[in-house]
Length: 260
Length: 309
Image 1 (tube, rainbow over the protein chains, first blue to last red):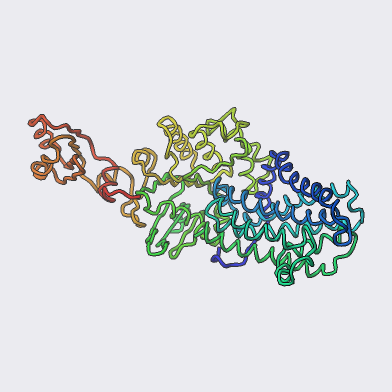
Image 2: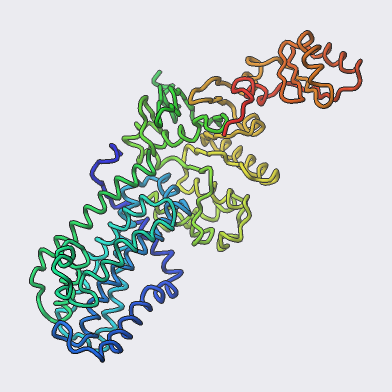
């Protein structure tokens, strides 16, 4: 703990903390899965087929196919964000689970890293479930679409890390409404989830390119359609940069909040 | 000197921690020997909890040195904590787990193998008076049971030293007595206990040695009885009710070595309470209580009677 600004030092001690979260999840798996997966699937199928029946092809494919790829990203973002905001906050602030863990030989860096890894794991489940439905409905059949499953944890890490910053700053659950309204919801509209980015005014397109969700859809949609993403390295690098910077920033804020 | 340090499980010198303008811990020295039960007493905000957090390496000190289980803190705090148990001030048991799962999951944080933890759980539950409740949900436990589960959890790594931050606050007398009895048996097993409390009877009963802390400083230290002998007159007469204030002002100062007036009540401290009691008996109208001085009297004398919030 050499000051709040030290680079995070993560060790294998994060494993029992991750495992703790997994054990709790396993107890509540059914309602948790239903809540996490039901909503995005309903929107995807309802809008995709219902609204899609009025639309010509979007981005060169039927709307349900376009939307399914977007839904994977949107759902992974939401799942990681919810976990890092509400669940982590509950463990840190309400239940004081972190305080208990910190009395054992585990450092705060490991606790936060375990939370982030857990966000990625949970968001992976969301992405996997959507992909299973997409495969079952024949919305995608390219072997390249399997690569989506490799991309999903990176998306989860980026959004988990960013949301942890809000958690570290938050005085109460109410604070998270700002994060959703000012950051998450606008991204849903600006980042190529529901319609191509080209539909946006030029100025907004520029904004869009800075946002992490755009780099998620830029990776997932081509893979979904059986193409190699044209800027794969850049997209992965941007997502990893968000993950790393978000984790470091959150770490600084958590140290100041909990260890001073 | 060598052998002396070998028997010390915690040594703190010149410890300082400042928050803004307030020095919460202002040059504290502590030396805790293996096998003793040591009490850290003080009013709210005296710096007790901060001192514990500093000793565990959870907060970086602004000055001074800490050596816990022979390790330098905070730099080697993690290794030191492997041999330490903590009962925090507020229960933070995992509400999503059963009683036994709480112990299993907590044991894993110490890197102990599952089989080994599972082997210890029956004994830990027995010790905590929770035998037969391994599969109970946390929501079904009473406050006292939760406290005992927290104690069992603190012992999951078979620690040599247990820190307890106000272990009996909020418990009913039955639950408190059970906790005290368990703490005594831990000391009998050779474990070292450092507890904070603001219950004087608790400190007097359990602790072989204690320190009174106020405004970040340790202002008195020693065995409870010795503190009472050194710091205060042995006899106390408390006078309450109508007319006591007046009596306290006019008569008490010439009868008692020291008089404290709190509202309508008067506390008279003296080596010999005979003249005070005789005077009160002669008047007949005033209600009084004659008792030996105790640790609470020392505490109030040293830290004052003002409220600390």
